[in-house]
Length: 296
Image (tube, rainbow, N blue to C red):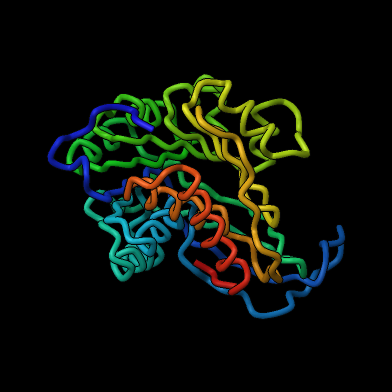
């Protein structure tokens, strides 16, 4: 998978840059679906943890052995400082992770049901959204061989990632911003989505995730991966289309599993492993995550 020649001095280095968002996760476990008009009591006390898809991906990539940088903004408040400290404690480079003065940090409210499935409400803070100039200047100084970006960021930020030509592999995640649409997949070396995101882009759900992966690749990226929860993950590239199955485990919490998968995948690609091996490593890491009940 080669997006561009890359920087000769850094081409062999396992370096990953993640472009996106970070926030605080407030998680509650509930005994069943909430009933309108009635109070639902949590099964255990709420937990407050570092979160956000890009932060989770950066932590996972760092754990998987890649020198990882997170490009993002949070508020210069108690929560923002907590996120900053979480990243530094995990050996994630924070040279491009900024605390914005007089701004609050975003919060995600997460409900986890008895089956480990989660429902997430994200309260974004517009003043912490990345700008195109921030992304351009950050990527120019990092020399990452693999760049991972959320495609639902503001269009100028996503465009700045697309115009960055030093990365060997460019990975996109999530349903693209509405003004970008499926055309945003074409510049990518790899697009990664879960089954619901794939269905939203393709306009239909496929019971077989390998079919969804193949159809996503037909939209322009050099390769596509569709994560399928307990069934594993499907990938499609120029050489193969296949499903990497996940072992059967008792899922304690699935929130963050997809990010663990993607961060591990990115780290393995940074180490120049084939896509099939990278997907296998991502499935293994995500399986360990959901069965351990880890919260970031």
